[in-house]
Image 1: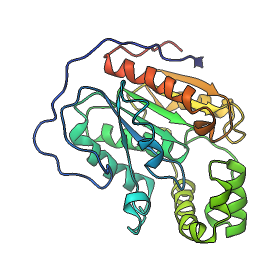
Image 2 (image 1 turned 180 degrees about the vertical axis):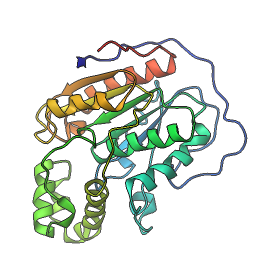
Image 3 (image 1 turned 120 degrees about the vertical axis):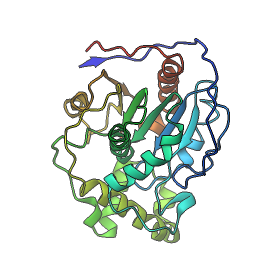
Image 4 (image 1 turned 30 degrees about the vertical axis):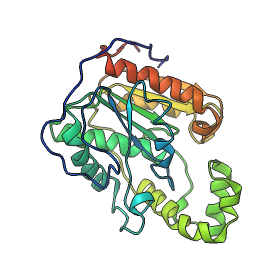
Length: 278
């Protein structure tokens, strides 16, 4: 396995115009049709998360890409909608929403549960013969086909699930201690874990896109030996970058992660050939 960071390429590229009118999709809230001078980064959240995390990335990444949060039903701007039935169903709908923009330069990013949905979305795009992402950045989780002993979070009693949320980090203690917020949040967290834990992912087909793996070096649920198995899902290159922190290193090492994503997106925007050395 090759451990590296993608080099930064500041070469400019001509703007791309989105052809025709595109109806707004609830999967891409706030994503407006406009002249694209930068590559697009479609972002998928962790269990219990919303697109708000990625909206906070828009300003620091505005020079290298346009950040486009993906919102699953039942949370965020789609709160109250019925939850998705399965990851493949959600991925197919997301691929259909991304499809009209896929002629542009773009990449996918997902953290934890989001990394699995990002991979399955790429497979759905590939099955539909749509242009593939120039990069897939997967974060905080081993690939879905890898075998690992894990607790079944989605069937836990509320108290046990709250304990696991504390262990994983990422949720402020004031939220965990708020009965009103937890009553709204727990059903979303539980359903997200249901999506993940009932998904029987195949190792194949491989996606024709480079995979960049990111993880906290202290994330006890995602050891390097399992992270290395991401190379089994791609026919292109695979690299691993470790950051300081645990499962939610995306908060602890936010600036370092955003610098890394910026480098990846500048490669995407500059049309550089992927580094296929392993």
